[in-house]
Length: 451
Ligand code: IFM
Image (cartoon, rainbow, N blue to C red; front, side, top):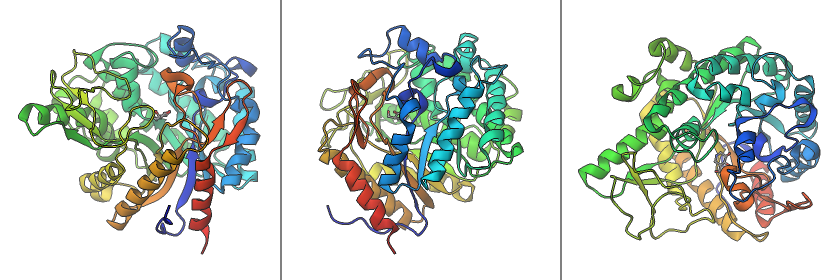
């Protein structure tokens, strides 16, 4: 593989992970159950993976921090489990839970890896989920309380914070089409979940700042959305999908406005006041990118007959369908590999927001493939880093890149079937084995760090 072009001085090289996907210890040391624990207990993880154990990160965190240090990573994006810190989502704080993240942060700092915690990566405390979860406005205020507790404890050592991760996926997969926890099928009635997560983000920014935290960002998924065919119906379907998955989240955060009046009219609460909270200034903006989306009108079919995305079919109740992208490589998950889609998504953000767009970090990018000699993962990462470099050359201010993921982990409803790690996890023994991509990424980082 030819050497990658040089990224700007000070560019941050990292890897990402999340609590439910790695920690295990689901009932240990006072942790409360999350909506995802309940979803797993209902048999909704396809391969019946042991999510109570996951990769055992709760016990093995020092080993994984050692792997990060071995990579030469500048930063590690992990998530804090809300129900480990506030077991019932409100009320008493679990000291043992906070102590765990304190130890983790100390270990990272000791190994020269900057901690970059995400405060919400989908594991809502079950007590709050049972009270409506993100459909309930109160959840946003409980989130801000928990964020304040965490920030008071960790702000002295954490240089980079992520409030919430991918609210679009939580809304669509969790509340609209019953693919993820909490397993609701509300279609457009899921929209309040989007609004309340955004409100939670805005309130969390305030709670972080009040505790003296800096380096505040968010992690939103951004995909280039393309109409399946050049027809009015496909263009309208793609535009709606683009609004629902991209702009409905980034516009409120970056501009304090809503991209679609008709959709905004379906949102609950004092929306105009909430938008002022949601648009609290950020220090940086996180982009998760995996693949572009090809969208058609209901009833249309992909040229190759394959529809959906990674096995997820859009129910007929929604006014769009997802088409497969033909003629490109696909990952083990069936996701199309289109590196230039990352450049396009970034240039699209810069064009749309101009000066309102803070410096960007790529907070997730990666792929699912089998095997230790994962040359296809290396090709994926190499291609996306080159596309990222092109975006920077074209003027987009990108300051860092976190690959998803450090180790294999629980891929939500897919369980252990999809492996996104640079490091292989044997789910019987929990032994970690670096893959070829780990060694490749280590060499990339070393070359980038060299003068
Ligand atoms: O594993 C997930 C992660 O938790 C959120 N973003 C997408 C990844 C791959 O599906």
